[in-house]
Every structure is written in structure tokens, then in C-alpha cells.
Image (cartoon, rainbow, N blue to C red):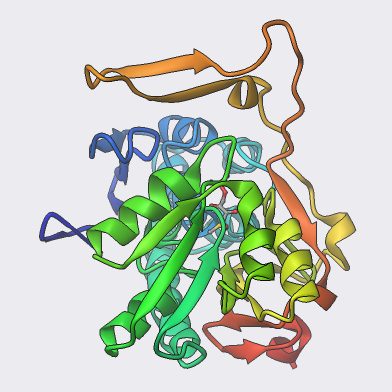
Length: 332
Ligand code: MRU
């Protein structure tokens, strides 16, 4: 996608260096970070310089290739990469594939290219579900920043816009880290797609008033039975959409499907620091980065980063191989 007229991928590899967009600084500052070795790429995944299932999948593949180029013990490196974040399946998929590959650099590049191509196809297929004038709600950021390019939940919206359809997007702010307010809104603003950031707790009310025609979200891991782990708060949107008869779509590449997880109960859910809940970051009126306490001093917090939406609340899953009711249909 383009930033100020120039095309960027979220992450790319010029061996031995991995380049990535520093997502913690967006939307206030656009900077490219260089990771010279696999440890630096691991740190970038861990501290969420790079985030989103497809993007951290590509990062994990590149990190594995960096480790192999540097003759680091492959098993040790793979374990270190896999310990960076626990929920997104793409990370484990990519680390394993590159670990097994005869040509790790070519394999890692291929995984990144496949991610971009899958997302482009998800956009084409998903756009067929969008009717001119629709108002679409999305949660978190499953745009191009969360993948190598195009995105998943936002790809159908971009494709529908390119087809001349008018769409309006309700962007859940997605506390505590604000990926909706900071990243999805930034993407949509750059693409001149009309949108409104809404408080996380507004979705059900808007749905009850007939203001939402469709919900599209991404996925971090999809279990064999079709249960979906996605950013915390997704489940509430799915329940509300079900109650009000609003189609609820999940868009994800097949690299996000984990057939080893029979159901959502088997998906590891990341718990993150209390500070993400008790504090908020942004820029102050002088334009400087600032972090402030936003709760009663001394209170503790609990911060699960993902939730699991049972398959029964999901209308269809949009993948690069087709729009399906259950993942099993893709692997027959
Ligand atoms: O914690 P993050 O920002 O890495 O979470 C990933 C996400 O952005 C969402 O869960 C998203 O909806 C699916 S991943 C494209």
C-alpha cells in the first residue's frame, strides 16, 4: 500500500537485514526500523514494532532465515522465535517452514510473497460480499499493517472501493493498545475511505439501531472446528451481530488455520502487561510522545490480548482459497 505516494510493504528482507515499519510510533510518526540479526527481529516482534498475524509470520520466517545465515543453532533459534508471541498461528507456521527449508532465504521471501498474494485474493473474494453503500464495522487492525500488504479484514473494503462502491467503516478503537484508533484509522484516512472511530463499547448499540450492515474482522488463529482467536473484544461484536442478524465475517489466509487445535479452547491466549491497561500513550499538545496513568493509582489490571469466538457466531471465513463456512472444507 502507499504512504505519501510511495509503495511500502510492512516488512521486507534484504539479507541479512530485515526492514520493518515501526508500528508503535504510528500514526504520529512513520519510521523504518532495521533488524540486523535474528535477535533484533525477535525483539521487534516481542515489543510489537511489528504486529498483526501475517506481519509477525513474515518476521518469524525472516528471523529464522537470519539465524540460519548466521549459523546460530537452528533449534535454539526456532525456540526463541516461537517464544516471542504465543497466539498468532502464522508465526509458528513460518518459523517451521523456514526451519525445514533447503534454501531458508528463498523460503522466507516466498512466505512473505504468499502472504501478500493471499491478502490480495481475500480482498477480491471478500469484496463480492460488499454492496454499495454498506456500513461495515471492524475490530483492531487487520489491514495492510497487520500483514505484508493489503490486509485481510480491510482488503475487501479496499477492493470494493476500487470497484467504485461506497463504503463507510466503523472502526472500534480497540483498547488497550488502540490498534483500531491508531492503525486502522490511519490506513483508512490515507486511503480516503470514510470512517468513524467508535468507542469499543459502542458496537452493540449501533447494531441495535440498524447502523451496521456487516462486520469483518481478522484472525490470529483459527481452530479446526472454525473457532477464531482474534483481538480481545471480537467475541462481544460477534454476539451482538448474531443477536441483530448482522453478517459477521472473519478474513484470514489459510496460514492462520491450525488444524492441530481441535477447538478454540486449545488456542494459547497471550496475556500482556497491566501497564497497557492502566496507562495510555499518545502525543501531547506540543507533539511529544507522552504516557499517562488513566486509572485509579494502585489498582491492578488484567490484560488478555485475544478472545475466542465460537464458530457458530461466524457467518463465513474469507480465505484466499474461498469463502467457507468451516476450515475443514479447505483441506479436503
Ligand atoms: O496484538 P496484535 O496487534 O498483533 O493483534 C493482532 C491483530 O491485529 C488482530 O487480532 C487482528 O484482528 C488479527 S491479526 C491480522
